[in-house]
Length: 622
Image (cartoon, rainbow, N blue to C red; front, side, top):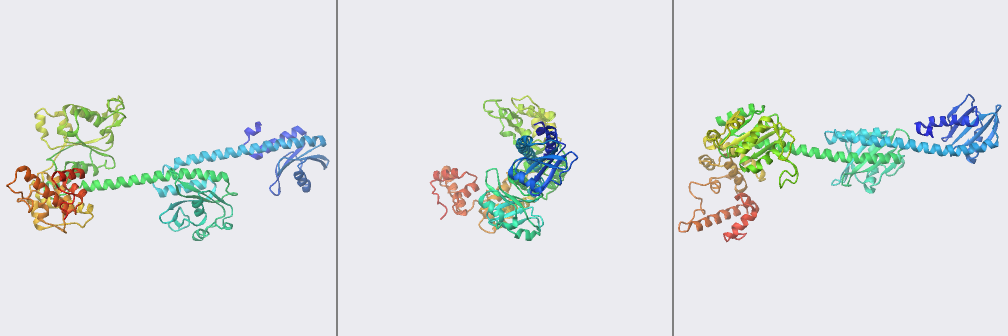
């Protein structure tokens, strides 16, 4: 049994058994023969040769499963079977029938020992292949895209299963086809075939693994694939490919075993590889979807953060952003509400080196002092009553990217002190925690208030002000740059017409004049909202002044919206609201959801408002 544990090769094990038999039977030489089907000498010991031993005698001993003693060239020979295909021949001086009986018993013991040894050898090899199969999943994780992963899967399968080629067949259920990738020898490297043909079609139908040892003799094998590639398939193994939800997504096939035929062990290994491959495919696809979504979102945000305008102030702003975007300097953006402070901060982020990292916006005016620290710096589980789980703060979420602090002038004094400490130390500590967390964040702040005046009035920390205002950008109100109004209007109109799935509207001459004469107290935000409503409401292909008058406060009320002065203020207000809602419903053909969106209300709120004004759901449609 020591040999059983120590030997790794069957032949070495057999030779060690022969040496023990030599000692046990005082033999001068020993031979181990096997019928495979021709007689083959596996190993021997001693100087004698046994090439002249009668072949018929060997056949007779193996068939009778008995031991015999005979003489040959001055020696006595003892021949006995080991198993159904092997036998041992010992040469010595004094073999008799009693020794033959002992040898026969020894042969039975050796047969059992050899069977056990071969089983252990098989288990060792299978364990090694299982370990190798598990290691493959690590290599799959480095694939950057699905195409690269599929090629990698095929290469690993051919290596682990010692075969010539491998392919993944992905099931396109809608087209009733399977797509083979990679398809070596086929132009383009991929092949589409019907999902009800060939071995793959059989596997998809039965969801069972198939082993084929003579492909061209199997009527299920589709020879057209070989004809397309010029390849000759001889043996193949094909198993179902399932995803994590155990749904069939295709088939996994390997062809032409390097030595011999595919067996049940190969099928089990391929099935395990298939699980690894399916999981890797799902993960890689999700990663590709995320990357694609991120790229699409980044492109959209980059488009939305584009600085539109030809005025000198806008040209100067574009130049400033181009220079500052490549730095990590803190920036303070000043300007009235609606002038585009967040758009400017996004432009600084998405034109800079941090564009692939997060952009996190925080409205400081909306944060109560009691929540500010948790919101900005995060908290640990149990830090306060409602802290049911740990949560990262905005600084952690923005790590590597940009944190935009809007309405910074409205931050409480306590919040200012905590913010200053983080900006100086570049370290945050979660509420209820003790571990400092390093963060690399570019901070851009904005306010519509006179921050310098607040500093003078001791309502804003001077040290924080200087920390934030390393560079200051001041945005002019829209009324001070009228040359940008039409450019912005056309930009927003094109954007929202695309969302409304309609051709881009043209601004009429009177409408253009109306836009330029408006004071724009809400600045760019007001203009953007106006163009959004026009894109969804205008009935023609051209925007006229009346279309704008419906939404803008006109110099004179539009027809139908002018109240009767004999009414009370409350009744006049109700009259105006009824007509205003009717016009919205009429333009949108009674669509309450679209009308509520246009009017800036939730659908349920619009419905309640109409009930309050004694209006029916169909009011204004006819």
